[in-house]
Amino acid sequence: MDVQIALLLAQDGLTNGAIYALLALAIVLVFVVTRVLWVPQGEFVSYGALTLASLQLGKVPGTVWLLVCAGLATALVDGVVAVREGRLRRMPRSLLANVVLPLALAALATWLAPRNPPLLVQILLTIALIVPLGAMVYRLAFQPLQRASVLVLLIVSVAVHFAMQGLGLVFFGPEGARTPAFTDVRFELGVMTVSGQSLLVIGASVFLIVVLYLFFERTIYGKALRATAVNRTGARLVGISTSLAGKLTFTLAAGIGAVSGILIAPIATIYYDSGFLIGLKGFVGSVVGAIVSYPLAALGAVLVGMLESFGSFYASALKEVIVFTALLPVLIWLSLRSRHVEEDDEE
Amino acid sequence: MSAVLEVEGLSVAYGKVEALHGANLVLPAGSIVTVIGPNGAGKTTMLAAIMGLLPSQGIVRYQGRDVARDEVEARVAQGLVLVPERRELFGEMTVADNLVLGAFARYRRRESGIDADLDAVYQRFPRLRERRGQLAGTLSGGERQMLALGRALMTRPRVLMLDEPSLGLAPLVVREIFQIIADLRRTGVSILLVEQNARAALQVADHAYVLETGDVVLEGEARSLITNPRVIETYLGLAAGSRRTSAA
Ligand SMILES: Nc1ncnc2c1ncn2[C@@H]1O[C@H](COP(=O)(O)OP(=O)(O)OP(=O)(O)O)[C@@H](O)[C@H]1O
Ligand SMILES: [Mg+2]
Image (cartoon, rainbow over all chains, first blue to last red; front, top):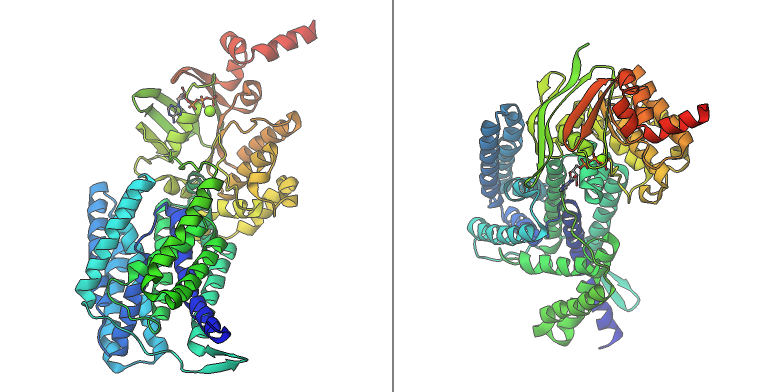
């Protein structure tokens, strides 16, 4: 391997690593706030990529029906609970978020899709169609389980993964899709050719990470999420509801997933079931950060991207194996170093 | 005077063991009521149940309304606030963030006056202002108490429940805390105070309850309880004895 190839591989690795870093951050965020090991993060990615691909073909994306159905299911659950507890006062808000908003987005998407709107509009529409799914998934699967153990939450998380993957097949079909590159620009930098596409992906990831950082450091809602992660009882005692924190967290996770999907769409062909492997790589990254440290998780994810890209050069058939084998030394190191971490018990 | 908080037949069980057996309690608006009792009597349990942190049986009426269906957060938003025995601070966040989060429910309602309240808390506890950038988990015991109280004040409570606010504090700071409690009442806050420091509690309170192994065994005006022989013997014993010696 000469320097040029090495640099090319590094560039590839960094590009994928940037996307994995976003996913790793989402997984860490969901875990620390809700204690859910969020396996289906990758599903938001494939939904994002497939939605954008549909829009680029001028087709109404399957996400529209998915969103409307999920919204109706959520409103139904809210309705049943509201009637049972005699608190109909809350229903208008639920109907607005779970029925009116999805229908409005569906109408907008149906109207816009055949009109070939500019790329930026397609991207914004993709994000808008996927973000509301986050809170719905939380409401349907996890809100009733706030007191459950981490293990139960993990089992539900795996179940949700299969459900979301199945729904992906139903609403997007079995065909894969790949969108054209956002840009064909290339820069010569000494011996290296830098693709504009890579720069765009890395730049977008870094930008999103900075925005998330500012959100958590500067805004009251960001602080509320951190507070819930640090001390759930304390958070409740200042009026931060665990459900609100959960919904907000899953909304963020869905948003991060959608953006990741949009970024990865021109890099790889995405099928309804591609999300799992992509999400798993983000997950490996987050394990490097022991699923609690954001910077380490991001670093781990970039490492995963690098391993994958160099692995595919040396032994292309084995690249996934290489990535997941890399988990072993990390796990051994973590277990050697670990103080006993006990599970926060709820009281 | 109308009651801002009424508790009727409140029972709490941990598994099969009942820790509170149908307690009754009334907190008149604008007053200070104290609950004293030995370790393990169920005082903390009672406050947690009133707050909605523990499942319970019986009625908790706040501002004339049964709050059984309200989650903890909803009770906080209505001004029913607890400083728990374990404080439950956000250890990995700064002092300033802890205080600001105290006003979370008010931010959601887009209430004004939050900055002014933050200033007032800093005024009251200059130590917290000095340490506003420090992580709450690294504060000294006394500073943590101040922060817990400060955070609760940021919620603008109507009813403030304090679980042993003087726990582990130096005598001078204890006096300060009781001063604050008296001040708060003057601003219209009703206070339910659980204390080991029975003498100080009875001095500041209007009404008192004595809780023993989950039962209210005695109640009355704080002023009368302070001279009650049984209370003196059990809860003021040491202090009363020392006074007798010093008088001799
Ligand atoms: N989570 C729990 N599980 C089981 N038993 C508990 C639990 N919490 C408290 N108890 C028991 O309930 C009883 C009342 O406890 P509580 O903390 O309310 O007492 P307290 O009056 O606040 O005491 P102290 O003055 O020591 O704070 C005690 O016997 C205690 O052991
Ligand atoms: Mg106690």
